[in-house]
Length: 424
Image (cartoon, rainbow, N blue to C red; front, side):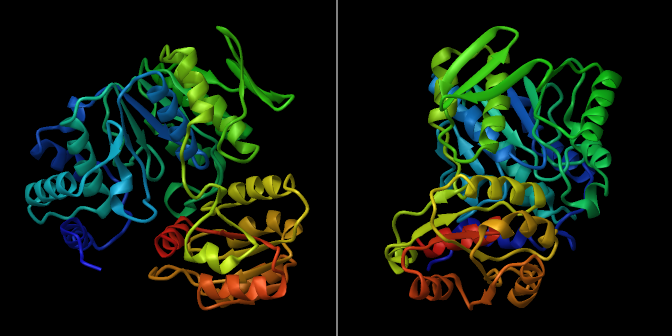
């Protein structure tokens, strides 16, 4: 496969800093200043932080805004199959030509100074979004919030904090309140924040930060409520009740994500048409995504093939809850995880729903957990385990024993991206 020009520049950017993660805003501010501060020229910004549900909530916000006739930019991370997925410009993924241009400009403006890959590519995204007219910009935090490279917007239109749970403890703290404090770093004086359901310690920290700086909150359970009734989604806030279709993104946890998106859209004054689009038109790959075509699907034969990129204990809980609602059919997991994750915490909620787990090493990832170690942890959680060289071999072994199986490939967004590339 021919290497894209953007890939060559991205490879160069990987060598500008010895660490993948080094939380500070100093390098970002310096580069943005050299670029003419494009963050100040963006359309109104909705800034989204949290541990779980950021991407799904952003996808619903985008669907709602577009359903109401607005042009929307969006910046998300990580990408799955190719980098272009991170930058969405007024309805389309960034083109190769535009991506190459802004990467080149950022690389030149940085002039060899130390800067992390995420920091410089975030600056490139802000530069690209500043140059194309749109009505809104959706920014997803990469890690944390307070010192995240996206936290450079002086006055967003809205902020959102999705559920906070344990993840990235080495960078954000080892308690919920510490992690929530980092996420609450996106709050700005006078800017309303929609807050999803939180653990008590996390909510207390968010409320304390909001009170300290004067940021109004729209909190779940206080200012808005969401539930289901007769296979419909019922949302209520201070403006009244909305009876809507169930979210097209699968899983009970998507009801809460939809609630946060709807609360945000209501605050922005989005029309009823936009509210319905938020729950019926959202697109977010690798979140309980049913794969229906491609070489891997062909290899699965009559088996169902699913893909999910969740990777922490809260994601395992949500995935286990969803699996419990599916029609009776043996579910076999094909799992690969990164060595920075709480593997046992992720797997424990899945054990009761899995007939087996086949462990993989994630291809091309230096920080993959070896398949043998993934299998060891799964066995300690009570699962029947196997290992395989790759996903195709895992699927073939499962369908040889059980042709009508349900196969779920899971454990990491990096694995999900590899699967989507392989199955294209």
